[in-house]
Length: 178
Image 1 (cartoon, rainbow, N blue to C red):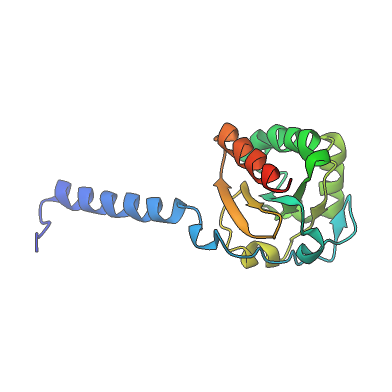
Image 2 (cartoon, helix red, strand yellow):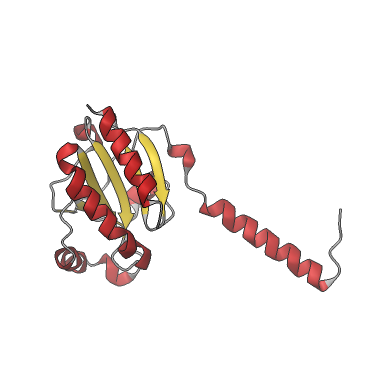
């Protein structure tokens, strides 16, 4: 075993270890791909009555984890809203699970105000206790899970970017519903 006694080598070893741990933790939860999507556990829903996954069979569903205080979520928002507008009539349902990052994100009135100001019309369950977040094994904002017409998780997108690929996945899943 290499003994890192030279201070620069010791710090290099520590830095590599930290980077490797960070890389491993940033990978999406691929273990959930191919498995049935968990139900959304929320008593409070905005823009909709509570929805159950069993009732959504036959639709392509995007479950997006977001919070209005998240800068990255705000950057993803225009794309999610556009997909909802463009593909809702073709069978896409967006469910924006609001899981708070900061204390002011927990106030339902603040979420409602943000949704009104930003014209968010899709269903938004409030996940203040992170029960849905935990059911999905989610660890990031924003995160998008695409479900096929059988309620199976088929695609996961973590963070910003990759909008073209995400839209292609939506289109592909919608084509399967024909």
